[in-house]
Image 1 (cartoon, rainbow, N blue to C red):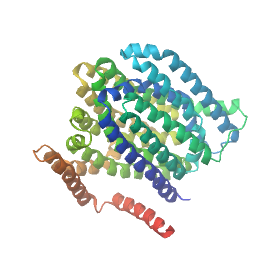
Image 2: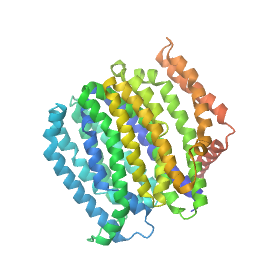
Image 3: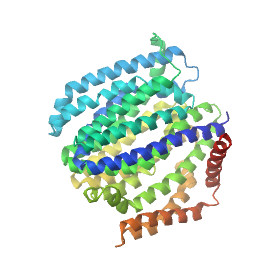
Image 4: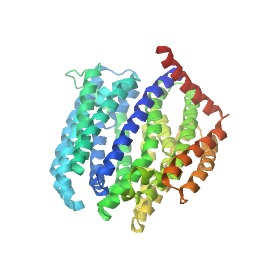
Length: 481
């Protein structure tokens, strides 16, 4: 298939998975948030960094290395499969043995048992890591979408049931554990790839040479993205951490949806055209413009209507998370730019530049975040805004070393969308601060913002192309029916 056909097919099923998945998670999250307390979420937030670090070590960059390699063999895949299994078991043993010390560090005894149980997901997920990579290589997002939707729906119902009967934080643990079990079983059923009794040292060295640099970069990114929650959990209460976590989750929802769709689709597609530099640059810039057109507006709208949305969906007990959500929306609306820049470097085999970029970004941003801690959680959120801008600038700088696309050139492609987005949501922001009922200000603000943004971009070339892609997907489905 052509790049356009690959993009349409990939976007279609990746979008179905992401949007439907996020929709299901959103509804389940709302129900759970009403049944649970901010402190319950705070406990899980405290151990998130340890699970995230373990997952990073288990993958070790091998999945991306396998996806990128054009002449991959059965030995390559089987080698990574056995490595993932062994690494996951080792990580589980380490977390099991250190769980009580982690609980003492946070002064939360319940963490010990919670961590030991939820860490089982590491081993369960590792079983199908290579199977997922093969489905991604085949751009078979349809199968991945079905697995994600079904496992999320069933595990969500399990979590809601246990929350309803009063199991507190354990309902969140059971939800994650059941999600891993169900998705693993489904992928094993649908995947055509099966491991052989092969472990190739040459394959391990070859893929490890590329993956090791990504491992360090991913480890640094994982540490930074989770260090904030650990610091808040140590310095503040579980309620404070729960409110921050909830605000972060709401801000991440549209960010993960749009960036996740484009990130998963762009990497294998850019990898296919990696030899044609001019085509690679053109496709890359188009992806940046299209995602920015969507992301800027969605995040600005969420920022503007966050107050009535939180009060309606979660009730007054979560009101403290509103300010965190508003600030984090601005921080996250630029994440897609950094992700696509890193994807571009990876497909050209410059994982060394990815590593250098991550080291520089995180050293600078860690200094900023640590400096903000004494001033409260709001200050920490603003520190994340500063970090995001640094990350974008540094990512573009390293992309320029390979492709010659500079900071100002890339910003000219997207600054109009940011301006239109801000102007479009101003009425919604003003309305949300009035004495009108939140049940009026929320839908009114969203509708006004959408109408204004459509007015601004209705003749934009990228908007028209996205519209054409959506229509082609819809028309194709209608013809099938």
